[in-house]
Length: 377
View: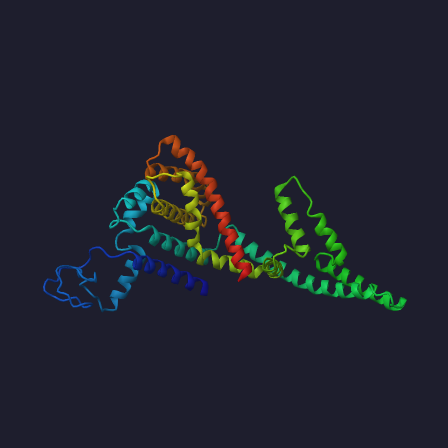
């Protein structure tokens, strides 16, 4: 229940945030001769020409609901002007906004904030889908439990190995320590965790490295298991400390990743701008602001498309919606490139191919950023 409340609050905040960034543009009736309640200027229309405040200031209880619904669904009437163009003619929307047609459309940043909040709200209500999020949480919790048990057992094994290395032990004491070590190993096998090893074994394993496999999926799993079984020593103390915390409590790291993805979603924009510059290097026709508008509108659309697909996945149309979205994403990029930058068909197609790869690189960089924040926090 609390998750639904938080999700509803996020949706409300989305509309309010977008409404706060987007200025109003023409509601209310004329109030000739009256004075602005904010600055006292004589009004000449529905808005104060000095401070911009509306002439009509509602104070009824019903106005609260009106303002709330209006903020969420209308964005001062601009949402329905923007979404059709963003969906089917994104290049025209981008070019028109860059060239000055801004009163009729939601600004890229306001739409981006709305899309981020809406995505968070939907995920909070219905989850990520496919049981992926639930499986990740279960796996992280299990890994956290296993890591805690394994670390405590490894401390005991290291203590016993230190005692066994002493040359002045009596046969009885040595036999007792060996039995204790064997009991710890059996307990580890019973609990289904990795066998506790001596320092020499761990050093030899680190020197040898993980095995190289033909199957990339098996390679990833084997490499991850290798890292968790061995204490990582990169030579950089804060990195080693962060990795140790991640392996000791992956559930906490996963929670931080999810929280930081929401908080730092804006980082996708600056991470993407260098790649956009690479599509048109040293071009005097296009500036950083042009790329900013393009990237922000594009990411906003992808987030909104994800929300639609996620909701449709709750119905029988889920698989069809996912398939259509996978086809439409590169087509949308092509149309936006061709319309915004006036590229030729061949040029837009070539740049779309590059943009798909660049988008993957930007997402990977974003995930690495979230991982670094999670381990350092």
